[in-house]
Amino acid sequence: MTLIVNGERIEERLIRREIERLRPNYEKVFVDKNPEEREAQLVDWSRENVIENVLLKQEAEKRDIQILEGEVKALMARLRKQYESEDEFYKEFGATDGGKVKEIIKSMLRLERLLEDACGAVPEQSEEAILEFYQENKEQFKFPEQVRVAHIVKNINWQTDELAAYTAMKKVQDELKSGAPFEVLVERYSDCLENGGDLGYIVRGQMVEEFDDVVFNLGIGEISEVFHTRIGVHIAKVYDRKPAFVPPLREVKDEVVSKFKEQMRDRAVEEFVDELRGKARIEEE
View: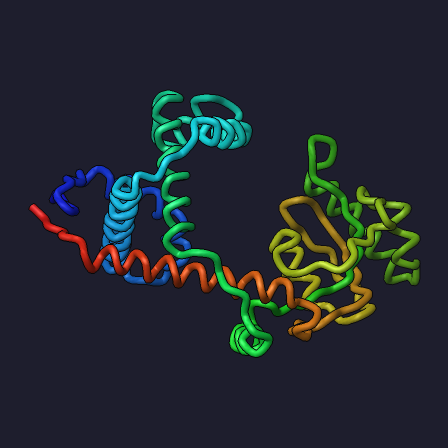
């Protein structure tokens, strides 16, 4: 099926390319959705993205937005540094040469300028509006649960296999049960001696999942049993816990204002695109 947007033919391959671009993150988010419904929604969203991009491109051309060659080269140079090779750089843009990448970057800059011109600067908001946004979106500013934890670890590598690491850590556990101080055994046995094995305060996701599953279920002062992760074999001790909490507005005001402005800009862009869509002629054949 071919889309025609204001007389411009949009080939199906562009929609297919957008589908594959969105698919990895989309399938993670909607993993529990029925596969057929999930695929249909992915196709629909990709189609809408392509239509919106075409409408924005057409409007930028209509307004004759000019981009300086120096701007294109500067952005292209900055982006190029993120990739190890020219081929990887070109592949990211679906291009085979620098000329095509330059065209794509120029188009990106033109669309960015269009949205800046169309939506204007985000106005300053009153203290009352900022407070209301904060109260309605407190979960966005929530500090997660934290634990302060130290560990003794034997890493698994070419020198130490899993059995040897486990055997060593069982000896550590026996000494702990005999009354040896955890901190002394860190110095004596651990492969991680920095800060006496103290990892400081951590949140879920900062360490590997197997580590989190153990330490976030320990009480203050409690020492774990021997446990395995993909890194090695561990014994952990929790020194302190901090429950999740929402800080007062005064402590996160800069972040609140930034997110508020971002939301307002997103709404302005959405309204602008809706306006273009309302005036557009979209056909299928």
